[in-house]
Length: 83
Image (cartoon, rainbow, N blue to C red):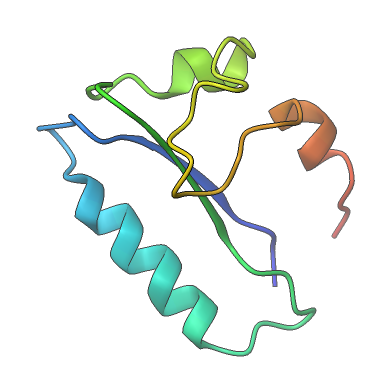
């Protein structure tokens, strides 16, 4: 499986946050090979633009604590894996 880390703003009205929640939940209910669970980071009060803070790193430490913590640069995380 290709590692997945989804980022979403909980105030997004364009793409509802529940879609990311449902996707990550469904993915993790499968048995991915290798077994790398999908992550979901949710930003409180953020609308449709969750990517700016994700890619520039300003979102680190600002995520909702009831979802996956954003404690590593998205680039460091991506470069841990190869296909």
